[in-house]
Amino acid sequence: MLSRKEELERKKARLQAMREEKKKKEERRKKEGEDSTVQESKGDLRAETEQLLKDLGISAEEASPKPVRVARAATVDGAQVASSAVSTSSDQESGDGVQPSFSPSPRRGAKLGLSKLSQTNIPPKEQVVYTKQTQTPSESTDKSGGTLDYYVLVYPDNALSTDEEGDMSLPETPPILKRHHALPHVASVKPAETEADAQLKQEAAPPCELSEEEKEKIVASAEFARFFDRASRVVERALCEDSDIFLDYTGGDKEEGEGEKDTGAKLSLNRTFYDEKWSKHRTVTSMDWSTQFPELLMASYNQNEDAGHEPEGVVLVWNQRFKKTTPEYVFHCQSGVMSATFATFHPNLVIGGTYSGQIVVWDNRLNKRTPVQRSPLSASAHTHPVYCVNVVGSQNAHNLVSVSTDGKFCTWSLDMLSQPQESMELQHKQAKAVAATCMCFPYGDVNNFVVGSEEGAVYTACRHGSKPGVLDMFEGHMSPVTGIDCHVAQGQVDFSYLFLTSSFDWTVKLWSLKENRPLYSFEDNGDYVYDVQWSPTHPALFGTVDGMGKLDLWNLNTDTEVPLASVTIEESTALNHLRWSQSGHQIAAGDDMGKIHVYDVGEHVATPKSDEWSKLVHTLQDLKNNKVDAEEALISTPIR
Image 1 (cartoon, rainbow, N blue to C red):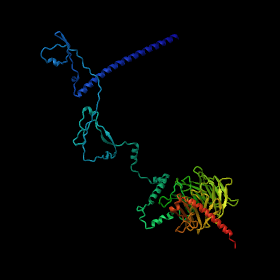
Image 2 (image 1 turned 180 degrees about the horizontal axis):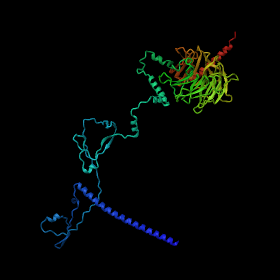
Image 3 (image 1 turned 180 degrees about the vertical axis):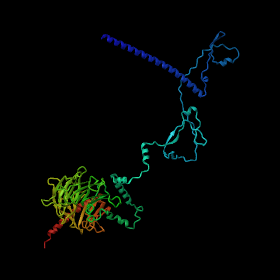
Image 4 (image 1 turned 30 degrees about the horizontal axis):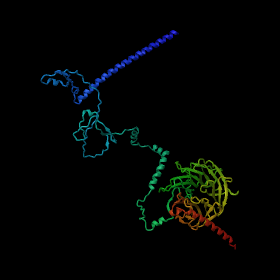
């Protein structure tokens, strides 16, 4: 075992010695190579120097230093004179007399060393020659017909020279500068072509003719249907637009007094919406303005008895912005639509209540006119006509509420109409169910609401609480209540406790939630009053429509006996519904022949003054005082 270990030690020592010897050989070889490289570099450097001097016209002999002789000191007449002289070989050959003896100094060879060379390029003076041509560059075209719209600077190998035509030229430059300087010129090159450009060129080839089968396949595709639906609307809007280029804003084109008459108009007809196919022989049952797009007005229609093959219920969305005569959207279902509204927090959804009791939902994002959702016809939902639907709540927590003539009040989620989330029967003191015809929620309230009924009574009710359902009854009308609306104009004083009702008894009544008797009764109409609504901006302004085709605007602060403004439809049709726009400057009235008349309300009528709210407070107090005086006079009058 020991001998084996010694043998390994000897092999390691021998291997180490071989490595050291090899390392020494490499160092020796490397050192010899460096010496030879230095010698070669010195020789190359000397050759380059001589060549450079030769190019400059200087010979190597002239550049080498001349020998110098120095005279040593000589002794003349016993006196030692130190003298030195510098002479060349030519001085020694010329001269007369006795030449003094000089001992030449040993000759030393000239030594050349490396010096730093600074090189400067001096450009030649440019000569510019102007010709009688356009100085702006023109668009060039390559041989293949493509446009060259890119330019690059090209540096040639040699300088420009003067040609026979007299174009721009440069003088000859020295050889030493020719390699390092040359002026560029502008050259046109084609832009780089990518794969996308090549693909576009291929697609630009003339299209091939499609077969009849391929054409029918494209027309039947859903993508083409969406494109055609959108394109047809845009083209129709453009064709129906008309502009008066001769309009004179100074009023110079009007007769004397005509401009003042228009300025002071309280109600002026803006336009009429009517479609020969979908509106003819149908009655407008409800209307609603979009909160997301104020120019959109929706109207629902009931059955056209003269066209049994057409859908019974129709909802049309009209566009107030454009002059087109056709509706923006058309929706329909198999039952007459008695009420409809825009989903407040879902601007693409339209909700309708039908005569059969179903709740239906349409979506304008789909190329579909039939409902995308509908409630079932079951005992858990409505089974009688739904005359009122409304969306209450906030953006994050809202519901759809509906009421039908059988007294059933339902709460729905728009995500699921398979069954109502909540439902209750509207009954007053264990009496029969309330046959609801209209409903309204006070401003900012999602729990309490008021309901008008077929027997003429008005009820207050609540959705939640210790006793959900009907709370109180207001008696005053002698016939069915056709419309009800709560005060919505916000200002210095809160009037949300006020509401108005219209009825078949030819009257409109003003109510307060604090009293179960009407505050005042407006009895100017001579026919059924079908609808009533407060102005959304003016606290004392409201509108009414009746069966004689008359639209009235009332201002409580101005007069309570006669309306402030009134207009009658020329066709002598009954107006059965009205809706104010959000701005309060327009009011729409629908008739029983399917037409919707949009009127502009005068600025001085629609815009409230700062003291309108305080005036209304005094007006209400006067109405209460007059009511008390009338009751006292009635009591004091003897019975005959």
